[in-house]
Length: 408
Ligand code: CTP
Image (cartoon, rainbow, N blue to C red):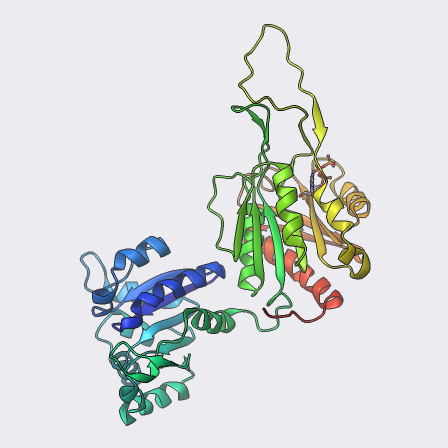
Protein backbone atom coordinates (compact mmCIF):
# COMPACT_ATOMS: atom_id res chain seq x y z
CA UNK A 1 0.00 0.00 0.00
CA UNK A 2 1.32 3.44 -0.91
CA UNK A 3 0.27 6.92 0.14
CA UNK A 4 -0.74 9.03 -2.85
CA UNK A 5 -1.32 12.78 -2.75
CA UNK A 6 -4.25 13.50 -5.05
CA UNK A 7 -4.07 17.12 -6.11
CA UNK A 8 -7.43 18.46 -7.28
CA UNK A 9 -7.44 21.78 -9.12
CA UNK A 10 -10.21 24.07 -10.30
CA UNK A 11 -11.54 22.41 -13.44
CA UNK A 12 -15.02 21.15 -14.15
CA UNK A 13 -13.59 17.62 -14.12
CA UNK A 14 -12.91 17.98 -10.37
CA UNK A 15 -15.95 15.85 -9.61
CA UNK A 16 -14.32 12.96 -11.51
CA UNK A 17 -11.42 13.09 -9.04
CA UNK A 18 -13.77 11.46 -6.54
CA UNK A 19 -13.90 8.38 -8.77
CA UNK A 20 -10.12 8.51 -9.24
CA UNK A 21 -9.71 8.54 -5.47
CA UNK A 22 -11.95 5.51 -5.09
CA UNK A 23 -10.10 3.65 -7.86
CA UNK A 24 -6.75 4.24 -6.15
CA UNK A 25 -8.17 2.85 -2.92
CA UNK A 26 -9.51 -0.20 -4.73
CA UNK A 27 -5.93 -0.89 -5.77
CA UNK A 28 -4.94 -0.82 -2.13
CA UNK A 29 -3.53 2.70 -1.92
CA UNK A 30 -4.09 5.32 0.72
CA UNK A 31 -5.00 8.79 -0.55
CA UNK A 32 -4.57 12.26 0.90
CA UNK A 33 -6.47 14.91 -1.05
CA UNK A 34 -4.93 18.33 -1.62
CA UNK A 35 -7.36 20.83 -3.10
CA UNK A 36 -6.66 24.26 -4.52
CA UNK A 37 -8.96 27.13 -3.60
CA UNK A 38 -10.77 27.01 -6.93
CA UNK A 39 -11.15 23.20 -6.80
CA UNK A 40 -13.14 23.65 -3.59
CA UNK A 41 -15.61 25.75 -5.57
CA UNK A 42 -16.37 22.76 -7.81
CA UNK A 43 -16.44 19.94 -5.21
CA UNK A 44 -16.76 20.18 -1.44
CA UNK A 45 -13.68 19.07 0.54
CA UNK A 46 -16.07 17.08 2.73
CA UNK A 47 -16.62 14.65 -0.14
CA UNK A 48 -12.91 13.83 -0.26
CA UNK A 49 -12.67 13.76 3.51
CA UNK A 50 -15.44 11.16 3.67
CA UNK A 51 -13.83 8.99 1.00
CA UNK A 52 -10.20 9.28 2.10
CA UNK A 53 -11.00 9.31 5.82
CA UNK A 54 -8.25 11.88 6.14
CA UNK A 55 -8.29 15.64 6.62
CA UNK A 56 -8.31 17.32 3.21
CA UNK A 57 -5.61 19.93 2.74
CA UNK A 58 -7.17 23.05 1.30
CA UNK A 59 -4.75 25.72 2.47
CA UNK A 60 -1.30 26.08 3.89
CA UNK A 61 -2.51 28.86 6.14
CA UNK A 62 -5.12 26.93 8.05
CA UNK A 63 -5.12 27.83 11.72
CA UNK A 64 -2.84 25.49 13.64
CA UNK A 65 -1.02 24.29 10.55
CA UNK A 66 2.67 24.92 10.24
CA UNK A 67 2.96 25.30 6.50
CA UNK A 68 6.62 24.36 6.17
CA UNK A 69 6.47 21.28 8.34
CA UNK A 70 3.18 19.99 6.97
CA UNK A 71 4.05 20.10 3.30
CA UNK A 72 7.53 18.69 3.87
CA UNK A 73 6.10 15.83 5.96
CA UNK A 74 3.58 14.92 3.26
CA UNK A 75 6.17 15.45 0.54
CA UNK A 76 8.37 12.85 2.24
CA UNK A 77 5.60 10.37 2.93
CA UNK A 78 3.96 10.11 -0.49
CA UNK A 79 4.86 7.58 -3.18
CA UNK A 80 3.17 9.60 -5.94
CA UNK A 81 1.79 13.08 -6.54
CA UNK A 82 -1.15 12.79 -8.91
CA UNK A 83 -2.96 15.93 -10.02
CA UNK A 84 -6.36 15.28 -11.61
CA UNK A 85 -7.70 17.44 -13.07
CA UNK A 86 -4.71 19.67 -13.62
CA UNK A 87 -5.49 23.13 -14.96
CA UNK A 88 -3.34 25.25 -17.28
CA UNK A 89 -2.70 27.54 -14.32
CA UNK A 90 -1.22 24.79 -12.13
CA UNK A 91 0.77 23.36 -15.05
CA UNK A 92 2.25 26.85 -15.46
CA UNK A 93 3.08 27.16 -11.78
CA UNK A 94 4.72 23.72 -11.64
CA UNK A 95 6.77 24.52 -14.74
CA UNK A 96 8.02 27.82 -13.30
CA UNK A 97 8.47 26.82 -9.68
CA UNK A 98 5.83 29.15 -8.31
CA UNK A 99 4.82 27.94 -4.86
CA UNK A 100 1.90 30.07 -3.73
CA UNK A 101 -0.32 27.41 -2.20
CA UNK A 102 -0.03 23.97 -0.62
CA UNK A 103 -0.21 21.96 -3.85
CA UNK A 104 2.42 23.98 -5.70
CA UNK A 105 4.71 23.93 -2.64
CA UNK A 106 4.20 20.17 -2.40
CA UNK A 107 5.29 19.76 -6.01
CA UNK A 108 8.59 21.49 -5.24
CA UNK A 109 9.12 19.70 -1.94
CA UNK A 110 8.47 16.12 -2.99
CA UNK A 111 10.85 13.66 -4.60
CA UNK A 112 7.99 11.32 -5.45
CA UNK A 113 7.10 10.79 -9.12
CA UNK A 114 4.49 13.19 -10.48
CA UNK A 115 1.57 12.36 -12.77
CA UNK A 116 -0.73 15.00 -14.23
CA UNK A 117 -4.12 14.60 -15.88
CA UNK A 118 -4.54 17.93 -17.70
CA UNK A 119 -8.00 19.21 -18.45
CA UNK A 120 -8.86 22.48 -20.19
CA UNK A 121 -10.44 24.07 -23.23
CA UNK A 122 -8.96 22.86 -26.57
CA UNK A 123 -7.47 26.25 -27.49
CA UNK A 124 -5.82 26.56 -24.12
CA UNK A 125 -4.34 23.10 -24.48
CA UNK A 126 -2.69 23.83 -27.80
CA UNK A 127 -1.54 27.30 -26.74
CA UNK A 128 2.18 27.68 -27.05
CA UNK A 129 2.50 28.72 -23.41
CA UNK A 130 0.79 25.57 -22.13
CA UNK A 131 2.62 23.31 -24.57
CA UNK A 132 5.98 24.76 -23.54
CA UNK A 133 5.13 24.28 -19.90
CA UNK A 134 4.13 20.66 -20.53
CA UNK A 135 7.41 20.09 -22.38
CA UNK A 136 9.36 21.63 -19.50
CA UNK A 137 7.62 19.30 -17.08
CA UNK A 138 8.06 16.25 -19.33
CA UNK A 139 11.78 16.99 -19.51
CA UNK A 140 11.83 16.87 -15.71
CA UNK A 141 10.24 13.42 -15.74
CA UNK A 142 6.68 14.51 -14.98
CA UNK A 143 4.25 12.14 -16.71
CA UNK A 144 0.88 13.02 -18.23
CA UNK A 145 -2.34 11.13 -18.88
CA UNK A 146 -3.38 12.54 -22.25
CA UNK A 147 -6.64 14.49 -22.16
CA UNK A 148 -9.41 12.96 -24.25
CA UNK A 149 -11.40 14.18 -27.22
CA UNK A 150 -15.04 14.97 -26.83
CA UNK A 151 -17.63 17.32 -25.50
CA UNK A 152 -16.10 19.97 -23.25
CA UNK A 153 -17.97 21.75 -20.48
CA UNK A 154 -17.41 25.09 -22.25
CA UNK A 155 -19.57 23.82 -25.12
CA UNK A 156 -16.70 23.01 -27.47
CA UNK A 157 -16.01 19.64 -28.95
CA UNK A 158 -12.31 18.89 -29.08
CA UNK A 159 -9.31 17.76 -27.12
CA UNK A 160 -8.96 18.83 -23.51
CA UNK A 161 -11.41 16.67 -21.65
CA UNK A 162 -10.09 15.02 -18.50
CA UNK A 163 -9.08 11.42 -19.25
CA UNK A 164 -11.44 8.77 -17.90
CA UNK A 165 -10.93 8.01 -14.18
CA UNK A 166 -10.13 4.34 -14.91
CA UNK A 167 -7.37 5.42 -17.29
CA UNK A 168 -5.92 7.84 -14.73
CA UNK A 169 -6.01 5.17 -12.02
CA UNK A 170 -4.33 2.62 -14.32
CA UNK A 171 -1.54 5.10 -15.13
CA UNK A 172 -1.02 5.87 -11.43
CA UNK A 173 -1.02 2.20 -10.43
CA UNK A 174 1.43 1.36 -13.21
CA UNK A 175 3.81 4.03 -11.87
CA UNK A 176 3.66 2.49 -8.41
CA UNK A 177 3.48 -1.26 -9.00
CA UNK A 178 6.77 -3.12 -9.01
CA UNK A 179 7.26 -3.41 -12.76
CA UNK A 180 8.04 -7.10 -12.81
CA UNK A 181 5.34 -8.36 -10.46
CA UNK A 182 4.07 -11.71 -11.74
CA UNK A 183 0.78 -10.92 -10.03
CA UNK A 184 0.05 -7.91 -12.19
CA UNK A 185 -3.31 -8.48 -13.90
CA UNK A 186 -3.79 -11.87 -12.19
CA UNK A 187 -6.98 -12.80 -10.44
CA UNK A 188 -6.29 -13.61 -6.81
CA UNK A 189 -8.86 -14.80 -4.28
CA UNK A 190 -8.00 -14.18 -0.64
CA UNK A 191 -10.06 -15.33 2.33
CA UNK A 192 -9.76 -13.69 5.73
CA UNK A 193 -11.19 -13.78 9.23
CA UNK A 194 -13.16 -16.40 11.13
CA UNK A 195 -16.44 -18.07 10.27
CA UNK A 196 -19.40 -18.11 12.62
CA UNK A 197 -21.49 -21.26 12.85
CA UNK A 198 -24.91 -20.55 14.25
CA UNK A 199 -26.27 -22.63 17.12
CA UNK A 200 -29.50 -20.65 17.28
CA UNK A 201 -30.47 -17.05 16.31
CA UNK A 202 -28.47 -15.71 19.28
CA UNK A 203 -25.41 -17.95 19.69
CA UNK A 204 -22.68 -19.16 17.42
CA UNK A 205 -19.38 -21.03 17.40
CA UNK A 206 -16.50 -18.83 16.27
CA UNK A 207 -12.76 -18.43 16.64
CA UNK A 208 -10.19 -15.75 17.44
CA UNK A 209 -9.10 -14.85 13.91
CA UNK A 210 -9.15 -11.06 13.35
CA UNK A 211 -8.71 -11.17 9.57
CA UNK A 212 -5.58 -9.03 9.79
CA UNK A 213 -3.27 -11.49 7.99
CA UNK A 214 -5.70 -12.10 5.13
CA UNK A 215 -6.38 -8.37 4.79
CA UNK A 216 -2.64 -7.66 4.61
CA UNK A 217 -2.27 -10.26 1.85
CA UNK A 218 -5.21 -8.80 -0.09
CA UNK A 219 -3.78 -5.26 0.19
CA UNK A 220 -0.30 -6.38 -0.89
CA UNK A 221 -1.70 -8.35 -3.85
CA UNK A 222 -3.64 -5.24 -4.94
CA UNK A 223 -0.46 -3.20 -4.65
CA UNK A 224 1.26 -5.66 -6.97
CA UNK A 225 -1.43 -5.07 -9.58
CA UNK A 226 -3.53 -8.19 -8.94
CA UNK A 227 -7.30 -8.19 -9.32
CA UNK A 228 -8.33 -9.26 -5.87
CA UNK A 229 -11.54 -10.87 -4.67
CA UNK A 230 -11.56 -10.73 -0.88
CA UNK A 231 -13.90 -13.17 0.84
CA UNK A 232 -14.16 -11.96 4.42
CA UNK A 233 -15.73 -13.62 7.42
CA UNK A 234 -17.21 -11.59 10.29
CA UNK A 235 -14.54 -9.32 11.75
CA UNK A 236 -14.50 -5.88 13.34
CA UNK A 237 -11.56 -4.72 11.20
CA UNK A 238 -12.13 -2.57 8.15
CA UNK A 239 -11.13 -4.57 5.04
CA UNK A 240 -8.75 -3.00 2.53
CA UNK A 241 -10.23 -1.91 -0.76
CA UNK A 242 -10.32 -4.71 -3.32
CA UNK A 243 -11.82 -5.20 -6.75
CA UNK A 244 -14.53 -7.29 -5.13
CA UNK A 245 -15.36 -7.87 -1.47
CA UNK A 246 -17.71 -10.71 -0.56
CA UNK A 247 -18.91 -10.76 3.03
CA UNK A 248 -19.76 -14.19 4.42
CA UNK A 249 -20.64 -15.57 7.84
CA UNK A 250 -20.43 -19.36 7.88
CA UNK A 251 -18.06 -21.96 6.43
CA UNK A 252 -20.82 -23.00 4.01
CA UNK A 253 -21.19 -19.41 2.73
CA UNK A 254 -17.42 -19.10 2.41
CA UNK A 255 -17.33 -22.35 0.46
CA UNK A 256 -19.92 -21.06 -2.03
CA UNK A 257 -18.20 -17.68 -2.45
CA UNK A 258 -14.72 -19.15 -2.89
CA UNK A 259 -15.75 -21.86 -5.34
CA UNK A 260 -17.57 -19.24 -7.44
CA UNK A 261 -14.59 -16.85 -7.50
CA UNK A 262 -12.05 -19.66 -7.98
CA UNK A 263 -13.49 -20.57 -11.37
CA UNK A 264 -11.61 -17.61 -12.88
CA UNK A 265 -8.75 -17.34 -10.40
CA UNK A 266 -5.03 -17.81 -10.94
CA UNK A 267 -4.35 -18.03 -7.20
CA UNK A 268 -6.46 -18.79 -4.11
CA UNK A 269 -5.03 -17.95 -0.70
CA UNK A 270 -7.02 -19.41 2.19
CA UNK A 271 -5.95 -17.26 5.13
CA UNK A 272 -9.36 -17.56 6.80
CA UNK A 273 -9.78 -19.64 9.93
CA UNK A 274 -12.66 -21.71 8.60
CA UNK A 275 -14.63 -23.70 11.15
CA UNK A 276 -14.10 -27.43 10.71
CA UNK A 277 -17.41 -28.22 12.41
CA UNK A 278 -20.85 -26.65 12.42
CA UNK A 279 -23.96 -27.45 14.50
CA UNK A 280 -25.69 -30.36 12.80
CA UNK A 281 -29.13 -28.98 13.48
CA UNK A 282 -29.13 -25.23 14.21
CA UNK A 283 -32.30 -24.13 16.02
CA UNK A 284 -34.51 -21.57 14.32
CA UNK A 285 -35.67 -20.23 17.74
CA UNK A 286 -33.53 -19.34 20.74
CA UNK A 287 -32.67 -22.42 22.80
CA UNK A 288 -33.60 -21.95 26.48
CA UNK A 289 -31.27 -23.37 29.13
CA UNK A 290 -32.14 -26.36 31.28
CA UNK A 291 -30.60 -27.53 34.54
CA UNK A 292 -28.72 -30.41 32.97
CA UNK A 293 -25.67 -30.34 30.65
CA UNK A 294 -26.16 -29.52 27.01
CA UNK A 295 -24.99 -31.66 24.11
CA UNK A 296 -24.36 -30.11 20.75
CA UNK A 297 -23.94 -32.39 17.77
CA UNK A 298 -21.53 -31.02 15.20
CA UNK A 299 -20.95 -32.11 11.63
CA UNK A 300 -17.94 -31.47 9.42
CA UNK A 301 -17.97 -28.43 7.16
CA UNK A 302 -16.90 -28.87 3.54
CA UNK A 303 -13.12 -28.57 3.24
CA UNK A 304 -12.75 -25.66 0.82
CA UNK A 305 -9.08 -26.27 -0.01
CA UNK A 306 -9.70 -29.94 -0.65
CA UNK A 307 -12.56 -29.06 -3.03
CA UNK A 308 -10.38 -26.49 -4.80
CA UNK A 309 -7.70 -29.14 -5.25
CA UNK A 310 -10.26 -31.26 -7.11
CA UNK A 311 -11.25 -28.57 -9.64
CA UNK A 312 -10.78 -29.81 -13.24
CA UNK A 313 -8.43 -26.91 -14.12
CA UNK A 314 -6.38 -27.70 -11.05
CA UNK A 315 -6.08 -31.35 -11.94
CA UNK A 316 -5.17 -30.65 -15.56
CA UNK A 317 -2.88 -27.62 -15.27
CA UNK A 318 -2.32 -26.88 -11.60
CA UNK A 319 -4.35 -23.66 -11.71
CA UNK A 320 -5.47 -22.04 -9.47
CA UNK A 321 -2.34 -22.10 -7.39
CA UNK A 322 -3.43 -22.99 -3.85
CA UNK A 323 -2.08 -21.57 -0.61
CA UNK A 324 -3.28 -22.73 2.79
CA UNK A 325 -2.53 -21.78 6.37
CA UNK A 326 -1.93 -24.07 9.29
CA UNK A 327 -2.35 -22.66 12.77
CA UNK A 328 -0.56 -25.06 15.05
CA UNK A 329 0.50 -25.21 18.68
CA UNK A 330 2.64 -28.38 18.61
CA UNK A 331 5.10 -29.77 16.04
CA UNK A 332 4.11 -26.87 13.79
CA UNK A 333 6.40 -27.63 10.82
CA UNK A 334 5.86 -31.40 10.78
CA UNK A 335 2.10 -30.96 10.93
CA UNK A 336 2.25 -28.27 8.25
CA UNK A 337 4.18 -30.58 5.89
CA UNK A 338 1.67 -33.35 6.42
CA UNK A 339 -1.28 -30.99 5.92
CA UNK A 340 0.11 -29.61 2.66
CA UNK A 341 0.48 -33.08 1.20
CA UNK A 342 -2.90 -34.25 2.46
CA UNK A 343 -4.76 -31.25 1.06
CA UNK A 344 -2.93 -31.37 -2.28
CA UNK A 345 -1.95 -27.68 -2.17
CA UNK A 346 1.16 -25.88 -3.37
CA UNK A 347 2.21 -23.82 -0.40
CA UNK A 348 1.34 -23.91 3.27
CA UNK A 349 1.98 -21.05 5.67
CA UNK A 350 2.59 -22.49 9.11
CA UNK A 351 1.84 -20.36 12.12
CA UNK A 352 2.86 -21.29 15.63
CA UNK A 353 -0.11 -19.79 17.46
CA UNK A 354 1.23 -20.74 20.89
CA UNK A 355 3.49 -17.65 20.66
CA UNK A 356 1.98 -14.47 22.08
CA UNK A 357 3.63 -12.23 19.45
CA UNK A 358 2.41 -14.18 16.42
CA UNK A 359 -0.88 -15.46 15.09
CA UNK A 360 -4.26 -14.38 16.38
CA UNK A 361 -5.21 -10.79 17.30
CA UNK A 362 -1.70 -9.28 17.03
CA UNK A 363 -0.13 -7.08 14.37
CA UNK A 364 2.97 -9.25 13.96
CA UNK A 365 3.55 -12.77 12.74
CA UNK A 366 6.32 -15.32 12.29
CA UNK A 367 5.68 -18.17 9.86
CA UNK A 368 7.33 -20.99 7.96
CA UNK A 369 6.57 -21.34 4.27
CA UNK A 370 6.54 -24.97 3.16
CA UNK A 371 6.23 -26.21 -0.41
CA UNK A 372 7.50 -29.14 -2.47
CA UNK A 373 10.91 -27.48 -2.88
CA UNK A 374 11.59 -27.01 0.81
CA UNK A 375 10.98 -24.67 3.73
CA UNK A 376 11.68 -21.04 4.49
CA UNK A 377 11.36 -19.38 7.89
CA UNK A 378 9.92 -15.85 7.84
CA UNK A 379 11.00 -14.27 11.15
CA UNK A 380 8.79 -12.14 13.38
CA UNK A 381 7.71 -8.92 11.63
CA UNK A 382 4.60 -6.97 10.74
CA UNK A 383 1.81 -8.89 9.03
CA UNK A 384 2.23 -6.56 6.04
CA UNK A 385 5.82 -7.71 5.58
CA UNK A 386 4.91 -11.33 6.14
CA UNK A 387 2.23 -10.88 3.44
CA UNK A 388 4.94 -9.61 1.07
CA UNK A 389 7.12 -12.67 1.80
CA UNK A 390 4.19 -15.02 1.11
CA UNK A 391 3.37 -13.27 -2.17
CA UNK A 392 7.03 -13.34 -3.26
CA UNK A 393 6.78 -17.13 -3.08
CA UNK A 394 3.37 -17.14 -4.79
CA UNK A 395 4.89 -15.14 -7.66
CA UNK A 396 7.43 -17.92 -8.15
CA UNK A 397 4.56 -20.40 -8.67
CA UNK A 398 2.72 -17.99 -10.97
CA UNK A 399 5.78 -17.58 -13.18
CA UNK A 400 6.35 -21.33 -13.31
CA UNK A 401 2.80 -22.41 -13.96
CA UNK A 402 0.57 -19.90 -15.71
CA UNK A 403 0.38 -18.25 -19.12
CA UNK A 404 0.47 -14.43 -19.24
CA UNK A 405 -2.78 -12.85 -17.96
CA UNK A 406 -5.65 -12.15 -20.32
CA UNK A 407 -6.65 -8.55 -19.67
CA UNK A 408 -10.41 -8.12 -19.67
N1 CTP B 1 -9.78 -24.69 5.44
C1 CTP B 1 -10.65 -24.91 4.40
N2 CTP B 1 -11.89 -25.43 4.63
C2 CTP B 1 -12.27 -25.77 5.86
C3 CTP B 1 -11.37 -25.59 6.94
C4 CTP B 1 -10.14 -25.04 6.69
O1 CTP B 1 -10.30 -24.63 3.27
N3 CTP B 1 -13.47 -26.27 6.08
C5 CTP B 1 -8.46 -24.11 5.17
C6 CTP B 1 -8.09 -22.91 6.02
O2 CTP B 1 -8.48 -21.70 5.42
C7 CTP B 1 -6.59 -23.04 6.11
C8 CTP B 1 -6.38 -24.53 6.13
O3 CTP B 1 -7.51 -25.09 5.48
O4 CTP B 1 -5.95 -22.52 4.98
C9 CTP B 1 -6.30 -25.04 7.53
O5 CTP B 1 -6.35 -26.40 7.51
P1 CTP B 1 -7.20 -27.28 8.54
O6 CTP B 1 -7.10 -28.68 8.10
O7 CTP B 1 -8.55 -26.75 8.74
O8 CTP B 1 -6.38 -27.04 9.79
P2 CTP B 1 -6.83 -26.70 11.23
O9 CTP B 1 -8.29 -26.75 11.40
O10 CTP B 1 -6.16 -25.43 11.58
O11 CTP B 1 -6.13 -27.86 12.02
P3 CTP B 1 -6.45 -29.45 12.15
O12 CTP B 1 -6.83 -29.98 10.81
O13 CTP B 1 -5.13 -29.93 12.59
O14 CTP B 1 -7.53 -29.53 13.13
